[in-house]
Image (cartoon, rainbow, N blue to C red):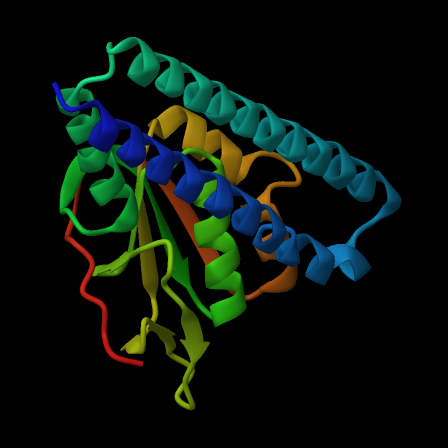
Length: 219
């Protein structure tokens, strides 16, 4: 039984997740701040309530992960932690990081009209906050370190690869949960509809999605 390697792998996985959760919490606020001037007092109240709910969910998620750290450390110390358990976590991490192709249910979001790289980044972060395990834009897999830039011809570049609209964002996760997170009152799709009034957003639950592994282009 190999205990040291298993413990190191657990620690690496948890550290990556905690860092990622902190970053996505910051980025996911951007779309809300950009639309505040378009809101009425009643809708601002809804936004504040939803933002508070999101922050509470993130705090609970971080608490759960920290508890997992403690449990993993106890398992390793007591000799119950196994390499097989660590290997399963590595497989999950490869999916999360975009290194492995993945299939499963989820949702798709078709965006037809004006959109930009900041909004796409906001959408990807919000999907992750809602529990999406893997995300792709058109046929391009998005990883934790993916970056979004605009182009002169109004395309959106993902990891330096231009993608032209209409865009389809596909996310694997619990369809009902992710769908509600995207379409709820005061949620990100509603905010986009205020900001991009001539753009159509179509959110659909999917029973089967196939996402490729990420191909990272040179910067």
